[in-house]
Amino acid sequence: MAIAMKYLISLTALTFWGLSMLSFAEDTGSPVLSEYEVRYETTAMGFGITLTRTLSKDHETYTLRNAGEIFVASIEEKAIFSVEDDHIIGQDFFYRLTGLVRRKREVHFDREAGVIRSLRKGEWSEHPWQDNVLDRLSQQEQLRLTLLSAETPPETLSFEVVDGERIKSRQLALVGEEIIDTAVGQLDTVRYRRVFDDPEERASDIWLAKDFDYVMVLTRHDEDGTDIEISLKDGTIDGRPLEGS
Image: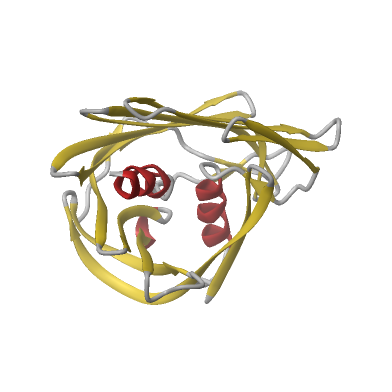
């Protein structure tokens, strides 16, 4: 159960949306991300789970929420951030796992004080401020912004993510382009693979919709024989349904 819950949580953070709705504010040149509500489906321990993700905007501040439930636990994540020149600037991150298993994580980005504070396993750590450091949820919006600003999908992508006392570098390698079947129709995708030190023991792949601002449509993870798959179920962006061909 521990592996299933761990990757149910971490892999749901590989979702992000746009549906050709990316625009730029005239005064700052920063991207304006469309609001959305979308759902994914997966299984853990033989039980089906629906994962819901929403992105909302209040003035220049975005709030990204992720939630799901299984019979023994519920998951809720929230990241608050802004966008400057194609870069995510973190403000706050909260994560709660409740039920039979309880966990809590937080990240607070204090740009004015020049520090990033991170809570993991009941202990706070403090890091010097860096503009490029992300929490594990908002990093996926940074992934989308990076792909949207590139003429072609980069061969490799790297992101710095704070996790307790460590700031970890997460890398993705381009696998190629594929047309895949989804619950909303066929989609033209680009496929990336997470780079691990032990690729024979762990593997994570994601498929991103090229024609819909690189929305994640499928994620697969395997570790020690435990497989997790998260697939797009349905969604709306600016009140309009997401539909493939």
